[in-house]
Image (cartoon, rainbow, N blue to C red; front, side):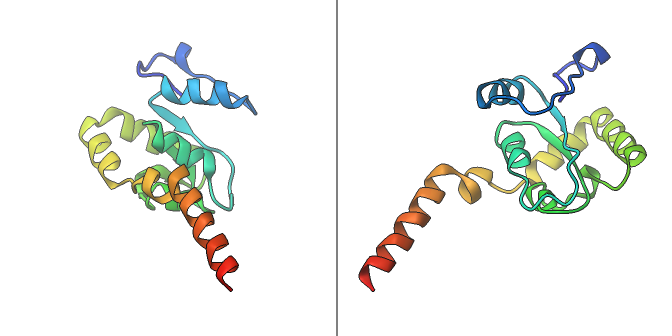
Amino acid sequence: IQTQSSSTEDIHIEGEVSRKKLVQFIDSHKWALHTKPQEHFGMVVAEYVAGGCIPFVPASGGQIEIVNQQDKLCYSSAREAVSKMSSVIETEEDIHNIIRKFPNIHRLFGYDRFQNEWRSRVQSKLEQ
């Protein structure tokens, strides 16, 4: 995750962190590099997008759906990740286009949708 500035002192590499720390990181950063290939869904990637970060993700697994399969954000190698990150970070116009193409994370994966879906399923089973 990288903060709004582009200084290398602002680059942080984190492993597993508490929920509170994750939210703090997402709220205070603009860029995120997700490195787990073949992830089934990509929950942390959805959290990045919901929190306003632009994530770069492996070109495999469920996380590509979270970034709406935008080629500029999906990479197949470390070299390609660096190249794509550099290109996007340097081009302000691309950033706005990328953000506009993100799916509505809150509508698709938000707490309210999850809660309503489960209520509907339980009600359906109770009616049977």
